[in-house]
Each structure stands twice: as structure tokens, then as C-alpha cells.
Length: 294
Image 1 (cartoon, one colour):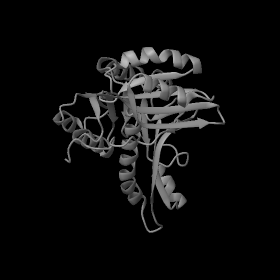
Image 2 (image 1 turned 120 degrees about the vertical axis):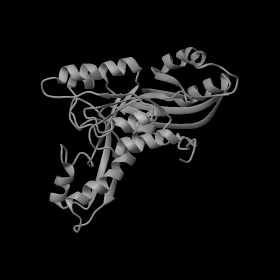
Image 3 (image 1 turned 135 degrees about the vertical axis):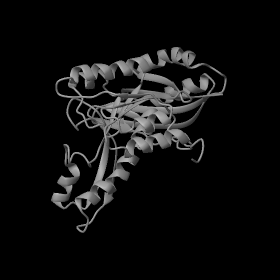
Image 4 (image 1 turned 90 degrees about the horizontal axis):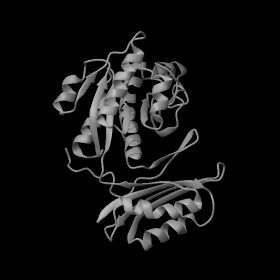
């Protein structure tokens, strides 16, 4: 029996959930998990359904048959095979904690993705990446060669068929053109609890303000720096007795966890763009399980 997921967004109206449930039942599908949200301010409805095709209907057959129901409600919808791993490119500069965390989660199956490449503007992590049998691309970026460098990055995306690009502390600002080409397909980790303390050195800013909570924010990348729709955030407590360097060290763990959770939500199609915000549904039962312990 195949496990699939259906994602739906449409204008708010009555009868949507009943129509979806009836279609599933009529086509031999058992709904194992479901989540929905009705945004009364925007008049948009969002739903994600995990289901098992008990009669062996294919993804294509289900999608074709669902078109009539979707048309009635003005739905934007997609059917997904939950066994199919999303192709991901990781980009990193000289801070390796998020990269190493993602490689470990990938290795044990906690993040069921297909890492098709790692791109960096430095050589620091070439050996680590190659030792995982993952292609490594060093693409230097300067003010003078930025258009050419981004063309190389996009070539890697095209050649690998990547569905998602993860900026795992990649310390280069992407151009507006690249952000628009990859809209909704680039996830960044910002080492701050946005919208506070934006820019290059937020921990120093936080230290100078004497904050008692520091955190990290994972968001989709847009042309507006650090302004993309937020997917995941978390915080950790600090005290007046800790230094700016302590803030950086404590922040690393939060960054790695927040980025991993954001990627997990995206690859399981739990994130829906809702204007400049997101709707993020809870994880389905069993989706955090690892293939092995270590």
C-alpha cells in the first residue's frame, strides 16, 4: 500500500473537508492524518492530508480524478509520494555546525532527503562533504564575479534537479534575481530571533542590549534581506554574566535545531505560504523516526 499526502489551498467556503474526505473514501484511500487551517483574515483555507491508497491507485490516477473536486472549490492542490525524497543542495561558508548537524541527521535517516550537492565559497568543508560521498562545489564569490558565481550556482541546481536549497550559515547575500527564480525553494537560518537584531552580527547586538533570550529563525529567502516568511524559531536563556562569545556558542545549538525542524517541515509538505507568513502544520505520527540510531 502506497503512502501519499495531499496538500490543498483555496478560498474559504463550506464543504471543503467533506468533499476531500468523500473523494478519498470513494477512491479506496484511508486517511491516517489530517490538519487544516482557515485564515479568516485572508479568506484562505489550507489543508494537508496523509493517506494510504488501499486499492493501489497511483498518484497520477488520484490527481486526475481529483481535478473535478478541485475545480468546484478553486483549489490549488498537489499529491505527493511520501516515500520520494526531496533533492536538496546545502550551501555553507565557514561556520560548519549546521552543515555537520544536517549531515548527521541525513545519515541516520532523521531527515529523509537526498543531498545532491554542497556548495561553498570556501574550501573548509570539502573533505567532510566528500567523505560522505556528496559532490562538493567551491564557488568563490566577490563583488566583481557575483553574477557569474550565481550562474554557476544555478547550473548546479539545474544539473542536480534540486527541489530545495538550504543556506546553512552561507554568509553571502543572494541577488534579487536568484531569490525570485527560487522563490519558496530556499531556506535560510538566521542567527537571531527575527525581526530583532538583523544583519551580520546579531549576537553582538543582542549582547550590547543586554537581552535575556537569544534565538534563531529559519525562513524562506526573499529579495528583502531577513524578511522572508518565517518557518521555525526557538530561543535559549542567557544571563548578564555571559559574554558575547557565550552568546555565539549557545546560539549554535539553537540554530542547528531550528534549521533542521524547518527543513523537516518543508520536505514533508507541512509548510504553506500565506502572504508574508506561513502556515506550518504539526508533523504526522512517525515522521520523526530515524532509520537507525547512529
